[in-house]
Amino acid sequence: MNILCLVKQVPDSLEVHLGSDLTLQRDFIAQVLNHADESAVELALRLRDSHGGRVTAMTMGPKSAEGMLRELISCGVDEAVLLTDRAFAGADTLATARALTAAAKTLGPFDLLLFGRRAADGETGQVGAMTAALMEIPCVANVTSVEFENNTLRAHQLIETGTVHWEVKLPAALTLCEWSYALRLPTMRGLRTAKQTDIRTMKPADIGITDPLQIGLKGSPTRVTHVSVRPSGVRPTKWIDAGEAVLIAREICT
Amino acid sequence: MKVIVYFEKTHLHGCELAARAQVFSQTILALCENGASCPAAFSAGADEAIVIPYLPDDCAQGDIAAEAIKALDADSVLFPATIRGRFLSAWVAAKLNTGLTADCTALSVTDSGLLLQSRPAFGGNLIADILCSTARPQMASVRPGVFPMPEIREDASGPLRYFDQCEPIAYLSQLGFTPSENNISLQEAKIIIAGGKGVGSRKGFEKLTNLARLLGGAVGATRSAVDAGYTTYSHQIGQTGQTVRPELYIGFGVSGIVQHTIGMSGAKVVIAVNKDRRAPIFSHANYGVVGDWEETCDRMIAMFKNHAI
Image (spheres, rainbow over the protein chains, first blue to last red):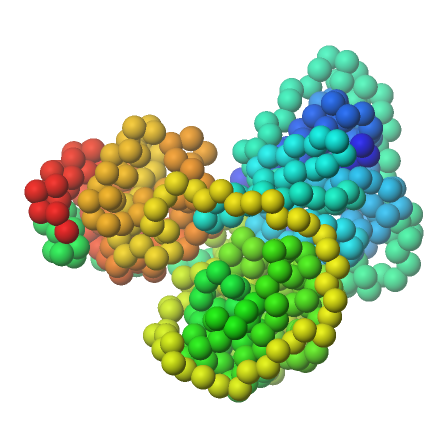
């Protein structure tokens, strides 16, 4: 099975730095692999280990994202691709999905595209579904576990009221929940491979994008126009003891 | 402004969006997955209802919704940000090649007639205002419970038409559904007993469940309590969980970081119990108890056992 994992670096802390164009400045904070993306990579490795094939990890980001990709190679990913160019910067979810779609079509064909269900910084959870829609392949979001037998993929999707069970024809895309598959540790051999491997970098032209209005800030239909600090809670608190709390609860509930 | 509000088959949260949209739009179209939600949509202010078939294949549903939305030629489209609603909105936005803002907490219209979409970012520490100035329609999703539910009259009616001019292709087959254990959904609960990491164990959450049962309420949890394995994700309140507006929220061992409070600040009355007087939850509480969560919980259980509601 040929699998592409779409991963993202996110800030290790939720402190915020904004540039003058109101896009997020990522230079000053330690960057880590987005938590939910770990599940996607681990699932990919397990499917490859039991059914054969290759796992490619791809991210769109600055050159410094190379380190994260090397870490994934040390965990067993076969190939890593970095989409990096100023023209990609400042992309909203649609412009990101367009770039990922173009890259997946260039590098593919893939049987499975795996995403984390949402990034810890933007938390929109849109990129996986948008990419699948542009690729015109089935997609299940919020997946907690997957079985693959007799060429049939079953995905279990967490929703508010329970779990929906799906049968999915390949090629398909899945977005994984944070806690579903814990990413394995690097191996000694993996660490050696990671050191020696060249990380393939690709620019817009390498993935067949010639129109700069498709990607990055210029290709983004949505624009952040203002950012403010959220007002914190404003309820005047009356301090009470446990006994009074019981009486108040009783008064409200009866 | 002409606004489409999407109504999923399984709930009426579209009514919250339609009622809110009345403030800034002249025409509200309800796009309903089946006819059952039409009366509710009309009572929430929809001028017309367009019924599309419900399909047990979310991707195919997205295709149909995209076709219908394209044909209706509206300025804006609002989706309820349930897990399925968010998925559909992203699918539709990609198909229509337009912008989408997820999880808006405020919507209004600018002087130049654009939909001003505000959403929390960075774990809720910031509010970003977002515009989609060139692409159309302007799309946004809003969590259930962010805007108040209007009163629903089941006898409301209005002009209604069916949109079935597209042959959906099949993407997915739904094999089945396993409901989660909790009996009362957080969305409908009038009383929510919430626990944080401070509750300390699965056993602690069983105690909260006892209290919730006695009160006819539901159990809520913070993300860190869910991550610690004390309870399941279906109980999670906050940025990555659900948004709730109960009559009474009682928080036990909840520290009250913004990722959680963003999902419960609409509660009518909040009682917080925490051993740390400086815990941020207290700035969201009408009543604060500084002390051991278990003592207050036990006393409440004892009281309500003797005075069943």
